[in-house]
Length: 173
Image 1 (spheres, rainbow, N blue to C red):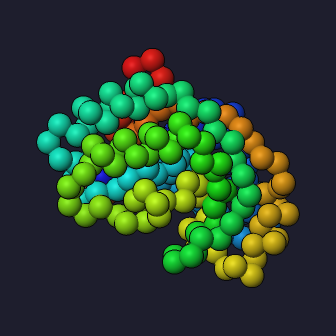
Image 2: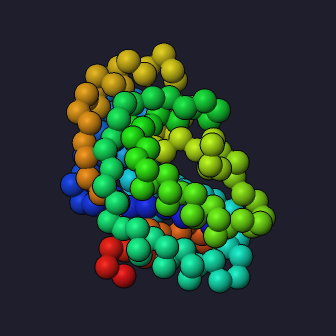
C-alpha cells in the first residue's frame, strides 16, 4: 500500500500530540502508545496498492504548489467501521480541491481505498484507532474543546510493505 498524506506544522502537530497524551493519561485508547517511528499526526488523502508510473513526481508537484494549506480542527468524533476516534477537519475549498486533484493523479491505480474517495472521504486527524462510542463524551472532555488551527506544510507517502515513509513535497519545494 502507498498513501498520500499531509503533515502538520509544528504547532498543530503539538496540539494533536497533546490530545494523544491526555487520552493516554486518562487510560483511554490513544495513538500516543504507538511508538513506530512513522507515527505522527497526518491527514490521509488517498491510499492505493502502488502508485502508477509518474504519479510520485506528479503528486510532489501538486502538493508543492498547494502547500502550505491552512486548516482548522473541528469536533471530535468516532467514525463508523473500525471505530477510530478522530479530530474532524473543516473541509475548506482548497483542501477539497487538493484531495480531488490527488485522486485525479491516482485514477486507475489498483487497490484504491474507497473510504478516501471524493464524496466518501471524511477529513480528520486520528487520535485513537479503536475506540468505543460510549467513551466519546469522556474523550471530548479529556482532549478539550479547543479548535486548533494551523497549516499542512509537507506531504509524505507511507509504504505498507516496508513500513517506511518518504517525502512527496513541502512548502517551497
